[in-house]
Structures are given as structure tokens and as C-alpha cells.
Image (cartoon, rainbow, N blue to C red; front, top):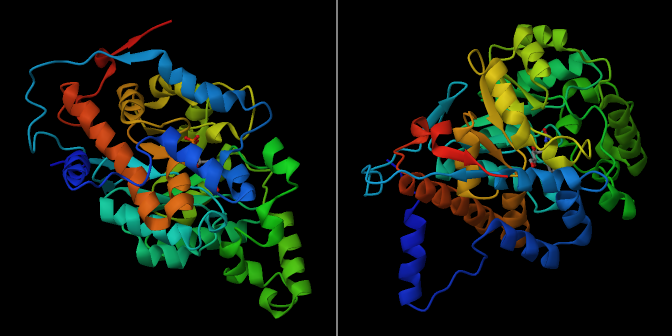
Length: 391
Ligand code: FNR
């Protein structure tokens, strides 16, 4: 039974007492506030995409080519009429949403990953912890309920295995291997500020807390500035794995019993290869347009991937979701769940825990409303018959 729409009543009832929301009611509003209020370095890091940023723009405009064709008088609008819950990769979620792995949240707000874990737990949705986090796997595992671990597969299998083992021990329910970032995209906003957080020792908490990583250092990083510099250089040499191939997923399969998702897939043949190699799911994503500028909008890549592997793997989606109707459209095109990205990071940056909760509640209430008003009682009612394409 869904209560996400209750956010609407809460706000209107507040209005009776003269209370209006302190935070914007749209993702676009959150972004504008973040642009005005966040430290410029943090804002550039979150908002920036690759090169001309036209793929980031295409991620949004792709949604404009789809329209919902709502169905009427189906009894889906009353109290208790809807159930938004789903099970994805064995994880039960109150709505088909997990927060996308966003690295270096400490840049945006201190303890961001743990707050993300706590807030998603409170709302009953999932969170995906980035390898490039400011908090450790164990800290997030202790705070989260439904969470998955996103692996940036390092250039050292022993270290990769250690990350995966730590995540499984800490209670992660799936491993998400991101394959679109063996090196960083060309990101002008960060380049203009000459800012790469990792070189400042930010976003490498999982390395600095890892026994395999620490064994590679001649001195503990906390010992001196020089030792920290050496640790950062060691990180730089290990981050990208340029030799990784689909067949390597077999190693991951040996290291863990958890379901495996491969994130960053746009080509249907890649989706097929990953599933053939043992992936249980693929995440159709272009990393929010941060990697290959000019690449296909993620939503435009979704239908072919669903047609190719949808019968034997779960297909998830991210890149460009900003409203409940976006979420509805992605699900109607065959996604089982979406990873929600930048808007909650803006909320977190503007107002910490409350801002993050607000950003997520906006999406969930909007989705709950769109679903009910379209004549759907839950995600299982969504399919292509509910959407039209427009030019
Ligand atoms: C990301 N993303 C990302 N993905 C990943 O697998 N590991 C990571 O560490 C990060 N880090 C990261 C940082 C920032 C600041 C952003 C904006 C994104 C990509 C993320 O998981 C997701 O694919 C995108 O955020 C989706 O695009 P939108 O919807 O946020 O525009």
C-alpha cells in the first residue's frame, strides 16, 4: 500500500497554518538552488557532464518524445489503491527506485553516503554505494537496509575481490559493476577549476580502509602528508582497469553469491554479452552524460536492450530521470527499476538530510500520483500500451 502521495496532503495542510515548503518542489528547482548555494567546486562536480554536455541534454529531451495515455475509471486513485513495491535482484523495495551511486558525496555534504543509507531505509527504497565514496562500505552497511555495492573494478583482482567480499559481509544485496568509466570523461566544468576530488584525498575512503590496498603502501596514509600523497598516487595507478573484459564477470561470480548487475550499457550487443557472461541484470545508463558526449540518450537505448535481454535478465535504467512521469515512462518501456541521480545530491547539498529526504519524496509522490491518475495500481500495470511516441 502506497503512502508516498501523502506528501501532497502534508504540504497543503501545512499551508492552512501558513507554512510553505522551504525547498523547491521540482528537481529543476533543486538544481537552481544548488547552483546558487553550493560551493562552486562541489556544484561543478555534480552538475558537470562531458564536453558539450549534449548527451546530458539529450537524456532529458528523450523523455519528451514519449507521452502517457492515461486510462480512466480503473479504481486506482483511492486510499490504499496502489502498491508501488517491487522485487529487483531479490531486493524488496517500497517503490522501484534506488539512489544511483554518486561518488565523493562528502564534497556535497559531510557523511553523505551514510545519510543516503538512512534516508532510503526510512523511505523503504534502495541505495547503491559507490566505490568512490567518502564513507566506507562498513559504515554504510551498518546504516542501510536495502543496498547494493557499485564496483569500480580496480586494476588488481585481489583488491577487487576484497571490495566485493567486504560488501557482501557488510550486507550488500547485489554487486553493480560500472563498465563505462575505466577512465574519466572529458569534463570541462571540473577542468576549468582544475579540480579532481580524488587527488585531494576525497572519495577514496574504501581504498584507505582496505587491507589489500593498505598492504601496498610503505606507510599508513594518516601518518603524514607525504604518506597520504603516496597513497593517492597508489590509488591513481589502481583505479582504471583497462584490461577488463566480459569474461572477467566469471571471476566475480566465483567471488560472490550475490546477484550481479552491469551498469553503463547502451548497445544491445553489449547487453547480450554481459548476460551471456553471467550478469543477472544490466543498467542502461550513460552515466548522466558524463562519459561519452554525443552518445545516445539512455532512454533511447532502453527499448533495444529490453528487447534483446529482457527475457533473461532484469533491465534497470538511469540518466535523466527527474519526475514521476519520467519514472513511469522508463518502467513502461521495460525497466524494472530506476537509479535516481543528481536531484537528491542537490537536495543533500542544499539542506543535508532534510534536503535529501525532500528530493526523494518529491519523486516518489509524483510517481505515485502519475501512476494512480493513469489507471495503474502498481508497476506491474505499466507497459507500452500506456505510452505514445510523438515527433
Ligand atoms: C555519478 N555516477 C556514478 N556512477 C557510478 O557507477 N559510480 C560513481 O561513483 C558515480 N559517481 C557519480 C558522481 C556524480 C556527481 C554524478 C552526477 C554521477 C553516475 C550515476 O550513478 C548515474 O548514472 C547518473 O547520475 C545518472 O544521471 P542523472 O540522472 O543523475 O543525470
